[in-house]
Image 1 (cartoon, protein in one colour):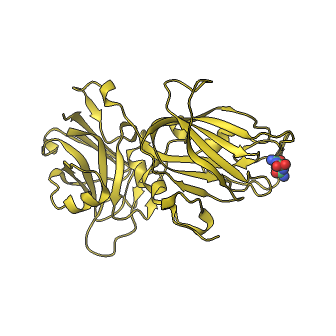
Image 2 (cartoon, rainbow, N blue to C red; image 1 turned 90 degrees about the vertical axis):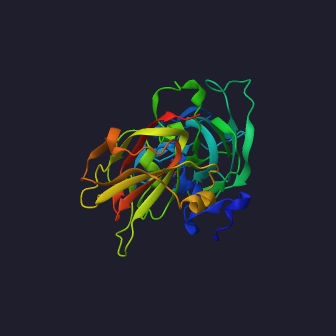
Image 3 (cartoon, protein in one colour; image 1 turned 30 degrees about the vertical axis):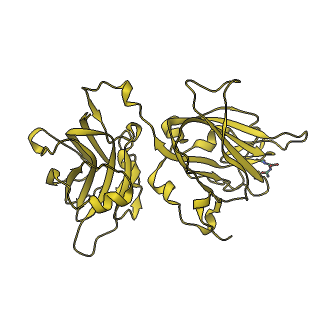
Length: 346
Ligand SMILES: NC(=O)NC(NC(N)=O)C(=O)[O-]
C-alpha cells in the first residue's frame, strides 16, 4: 500500500512507510512503562486490553491457545452479534500534548476492526459520566496486520483517551506519542529540579545521528535496562563528533549534570561535553540557526564504560540560565541517560 503525506492527518500503512517524525522525537504517553492504564473496556474476551499498552513489540506465537481461543498479543474483543461497538478508556502515563498516534493491528488478520476513532479529555482524577470527550481522530479505516500512523496537530494537554473500534476485533498496540506537560506552579521555585527530565517537559529537539537506539530514552526516568535503552550513533569514519540538543522543561541555571554510559562498553564515547543556550523560540529551525553560539557548561571530559558520571561545583562553567543544552560525544558512541539539575529561572 502506498504511503501518503501525514501532514493532512492521513493514516499511513507502516508496511510502506518509515517511522514518522513524531514517533522518533516523542515518548509514548500510553506506555505501561509510564504507568498508563486501561480503566475500562466494553469487552476483552479474547485478549486483555492492558496488553495493548505494553512497550514491547507485539508478537504472534504459533500454536499458542488459551481457554478463550488463540492467544493474541493485544486487546481483542469477541465477535459482536447484537450491534454496537467496543471501546476502551485509557489514562495516559503522563498528561501531555499529543503529536501522533499509532493504532497497530500487527498479527490481527481475520479479526482486526475495520475502523477506529479516538476521543480525548482532560480531567482531574478519572473520567465519569459527566466527562466531556473531544474527538481527536474521526472514524477512520484500518487494515489488518499494519501500523496506522496518525499525525496530530493539536496543542491542548490531555489526560485520557477513549479508543472506539467498529464494531469489534483486535488492536495489538495503541501508541500515543506526545510531549508531557509539567505544571511548574506546583513545584518549589527555590529547589533543585531535574529540568531535562521527560516528565518535567524535557524534549529531544534534534541530533545529527541516531543510527541505533532512540534519543528520547536519554531523558527517561531510571537507568537503562540494556544497550538499546539510550542514544547510540553509527561508527564515525570521518572527522567531527556527534551531538544531541535537549530542550529543558523550564529555563534554569544548571548546577549538576549526569552522563550515564550504562551498558555501553565497547562503544562508549571517548569524551563528552555539554553546552547551554538560552533561546527565545523553540522551533527546530531557529535552534539550528542560533546554534552558532553555545557557551560551554561542561568542558570535554573523559568517559568510562558502563558508568554514571556526575559533574557539579567547579566542574561546571556558569553561563547563566539556559533553555537548551547540547550534549556532544567525541567522536561517537552511546549514552544511556543525560540528566541536568538546575534552579528555575524567572
Ligand atoms: N483464530 C482466531 O483468532 N479467532 C478468534 N480470535 C481468537 N483470539 O481466538 C476470532 O474469532 O477472532
